[in-house]
Image 1 (cartoon, rainbow, N blue to C red):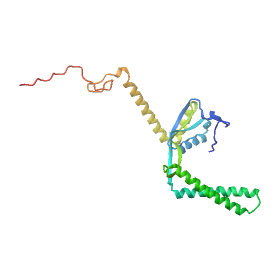
Image 2 (image 1 turned 45 degrees about the vertical axis):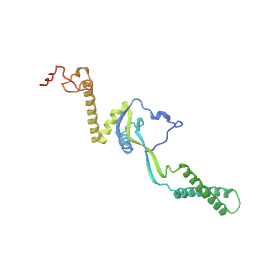
Image 3 (image 1 turned 30 degrees about the vertical axis):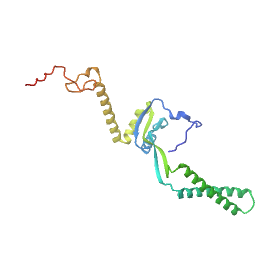
Image 4 (image 1 turned 180 degrees about the horizontal axis):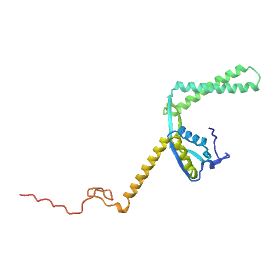
Length: 221
């Protein structure tokens, strides 16, 4: 499988992310599962050019990789500066005559010192509010495979053959959701507002019987 970046200058453009009346073929917990489903559709002649994989419920995950100390910051800055100095010295040696090694060594030393100071200044500006290193990534909680409405029945039949158990579970869940919606609609209809004594009435408060209750017996002297 190959992918290519899309943007305003792409031959496909923003239209590549639009479908005519998109409908769901399935929801998957990981991108690998969604990719497997689309690959199966492609292998069976399904028009996958009309398929979208949409990541939903986005969240940012940050993994802490280590503690950030002054020595570690200084060492990293010095190494980065040294590499930059070596590159600058090599470029200068190509256009100027003289001792190449001396020139490269001097730029390496200068770059290391510059990188060390610059990194320590940056650490001081944070005022100790972020003394750790980390990497972050935006991930989706689930992935939904969509296609145009005219191909949805064909796609669902193919995916049923790919994973019959998952398809059966999805059908059961859909039937339960439909039955629950019908029960809610029937319960909320005007013809079903009567309730038994002591049950919850239409307003949600406890129903009180309409017949008169027996008055309390007066105390005897």
